[in-house]
Figure (cartoon, rainbow over the protein chains, first blue to last red):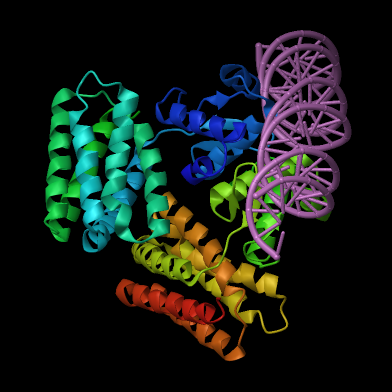
Length: 218
Length: 218
DNA sequence: CTAGGCCAAATAATCGATTTTTACTAGAAA
DNA sequence: TTTCTAGTAAAAATCGATTATTTGGCCTAG
């Protein structure tokens, strides 16, 4: 959906889409909560049509559930689904990283180093939203040159899903250090073109995140 | 999106969504064509709002491209993308079939036999649209008990994408027999719980379809 | 006292009109 | 002839009002 924003000036519908998406990932709406059109209109100060279009997009994307004649609901969180999302992430991102290590050029190496640098510089007093953005960018940079548009698309989608779970979990300092260390190690393995080990580590990385999230899920 | 139709009476937006989706898969609109709102309104005899909502869903789903302030376009067809979709299908459906063979119960076996029976009974004077539906149902039945909601979701999405390519290709009688034979063999291998061979054959099956489609692509 | 049905309020969905933006064309200047 | 620009037509996006559906409370019948 990012492409839509880049080309051409953003429409109201696109702006609301992005705002709602962010707020959904941030857990600003409770799982299972019903999103009332009238309330959303007030909250975001927008008209009916663009709001409904944004909601329709989000439902098709999988961040909302749409029931005919009954409006829109935030999706529930369940351990089963977290397990599903985690396993899918492991396989798709693992595969993508292998391909990226194979195909990535110097430009990729620089981007990756840059993304990791920015992420690790963000310290504890950086706003959460900003850190999350840097974190997403890093993981995106990691797999970007995998060569498959659809693979990247699915990975982003799963990332958004996963974030809903991750962000309900408490953020322990120690864990963050551990994850940061893994990020660094991932960069090292990627630059060393060690596809096998890089993939293994990424899968561990995902599993670790998932286990933490699972504890505070239901 | 099928769930939406089942629960609750269908809204106009949902009906248009399904109609448009079918027509897009059938290749009723040219690749790259611009879909004018006014024209679509006449064609489907619907109001503006539900139509726009359906278009927004289709764009989020990946069957349309949305450019801000410039409306909606049918996606282009390209060999590169077909290759991408094919490879993704091979991996995801292959994996799903392995899991389905492992987890599928007797109910699955019956469903699979039934789906294959209906498909093979559909002879050359069966309407194309109907055959396509049976074909989709068969492939869906094959992987249904894989245990992963997200895997199934991605597979369906890729299937829709793939169909756009497949349906522009001429339908040779000989090829159809060959594919039908593979369907039968897939059922046999599935019932024999031979996950390895079943997966291999499914991957061949996808590749074969893809090669035919590729010839009539650009 | 409960089950079922009816009515009113709330909410979602749709419509038609209006505003905004883009695409096209013709005419003027280089 | 080409290129730039103004004006116009076409199309997309948005708005406010209207219609249709659901929800929940209340009343009645059993």
